[in-house]
Length: 452
Image (cartoon, rainbow, N blue to C red; front, side, top):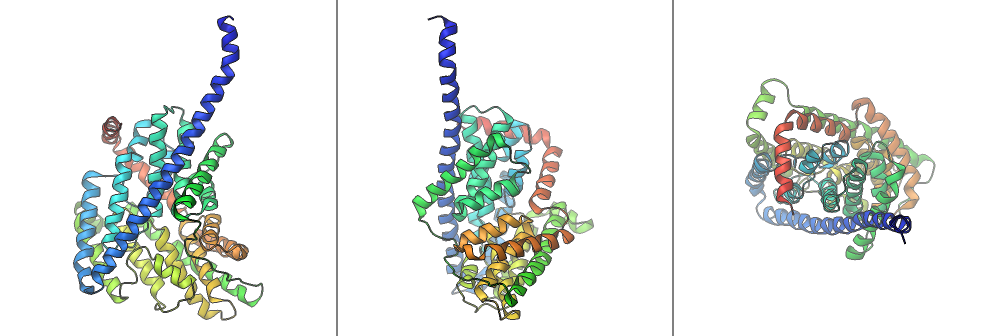
């Protein structure tokens, strides 16, 4: 057979082989992202428990632990791991829009992913009101990016698909919510979802969900609740949660953006000159807030939100406001950490307050409405907010009320914060990255050369 004949017969086989190799990268990456998310979750839980165990017999110890821990996190981030600060989701959104491979390697390096994990755990061990879900998105995208390099993926659209798949798989694995991972990829991580790559991204999320279920069991993040909201007088809670969630969530997002852009005048210059001292001051403010509520605002807020979903109402009514301030202070410090879990805790506290105003509605149902509405107000991703709360509580009966409250909160939030939080933070990050382009490119090359 001639060379041309062989090429004609082997060409389709070779193309099929390449297609399966590309799919294999997505699937193997999804399994690795799931494993990383499980390890991260275990370490974060242990760090949170360690902090509470330490301050339980000696509450005033928080006045030393919080400032010292915040200062250490800020110093390590500033000196050794620039790009690890904050949630991690803006970095993934920025990376999806960058064409320079060296800059992508800098933002989504395995070195930075490991630092993100370690520093977030350190922050939780210091009492910070942060979550691990946002950082898991950056870690997942970094794992996929590294696999893409190993598989010699060179086309920008294929690398972008890997980044989106890694971030979405991170959400699915962190919350054990595959559907929310898919919605999050479409609504938040990507402004447009290309038909050519959507199947691979979806398959990666599904594989991550299967792997997480296999390792951790088919559990719901906040347990199971059968609370329902029948149409009628109880729907006043939907309106109240939607409006209040939009006001508080949009206000919180606007404050975060203002701080990300930099404080004006002398205050801004002092913060820029003494970032570690400012982080320590933030830690001291957090310690004061925590002591005023007997430690309830420290950590992710997972335990408090789960208790309120389950019907426990022993927290003070102003818990949601104190948790909001604690999260604001923690984020302002510049240490790594996300806002997913703390925002859900704030929303649960808000829903609990609304439940007292609408006795016709079941309290458990109103707590779910508050969680979805406040989260939608903060991130301005209403479908993600509704789906993630529905999946985390295994309650499909609340889908329509959750959607209604989330979209109402989204509309109100847009009046206070004109830009979606993560997208606006990604633009700020990109401007700073481009402003230090020569330095970043060099760091990215060094980091890439250091990787196997």
